[in-house]
Image (cartoon, rainbow, N blue to C red; front, side, top):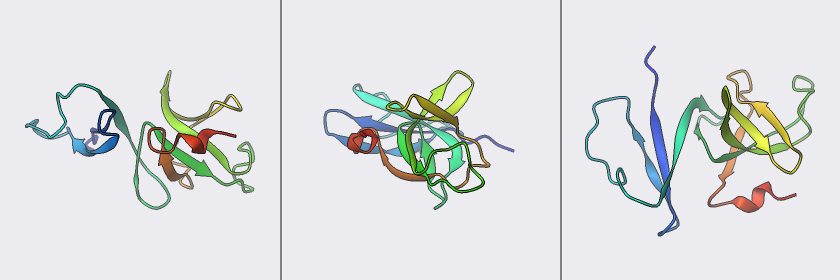
Length: 121
């Protein structure tokens, strides 16, 4: 199985999310590659319940049900790489849950650059 290596970037100057770039193939010249003042966000290799790629910096939500009894109802957090892998971290509650394939009910609702208010409680 080939590992997909993709990044997207946030351009602080223009306040825009730049299109993802797949770096798993031959590297060529990309629109934002090599520009200063961009925050890179790596693709986690996972998709949300709608089939959208999950990147570092995405804000996701999962609703409580009987399967995920350890997750508080409507848990919202940002995707981060922590120690050994990707987690969904809610800073206000100091909780982090591993972002595993089994948690297919995560849904992307924004990102930390364009929607930081989603992380406020």
